[in-house]
Image 1 (spheres, rainbow over the protein chains, first blue to last red):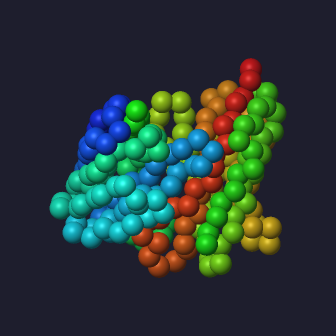
Image 2 (spheres, chains in turn purple, yellow):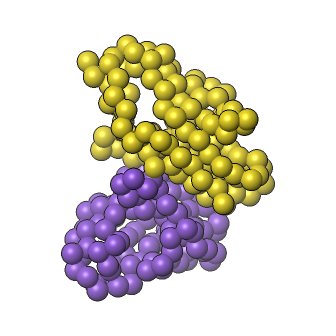
Length: 114
Length: 112
């Protein structure tokens, strides 16, 4: 059981480049989300999805785009990378959006924008 | 707006000593509180949640609504407890959309 899988694990980008962080889960979870982890700030929600075809913004959505064409996949797109987007990105999923369900995290993607 | 505060960025204790990681929150509704742990080079994982009132790996946490706190405690720390700990909050009841508000995290180091 792979759980939540993120790729790539490490990436270096130049300012202005675009890229996509991939996230896939094999647990048939309805709910998926993306967080970024920065020192001294904890994890902050970027975007989330409560099911295929439905996405919404979290706390820090600017500069990021998401789509949810299938239940399994929830890619995060950086449209024009900026140094402020240097961070560790975590994808997460849970069975549905009801409170109390365990949220499972991926291993993280380390992104550096130079 | 909901907020979670972990006042200690770093916490060091010796093996066998008691440890308490502090967490305070502000939330206008009925909160659900969690502790997540991230061991070195591993993914973030749920340690415990207040509704379960369980003890995991010797850790306990009690929700104190009067003091709006959810401190994590362990009577005898072990070296393998060294990790980053996050306190997190979600809306209790109904749909929270899985949105968690995290604290800043506390790095716990347990010395031999």
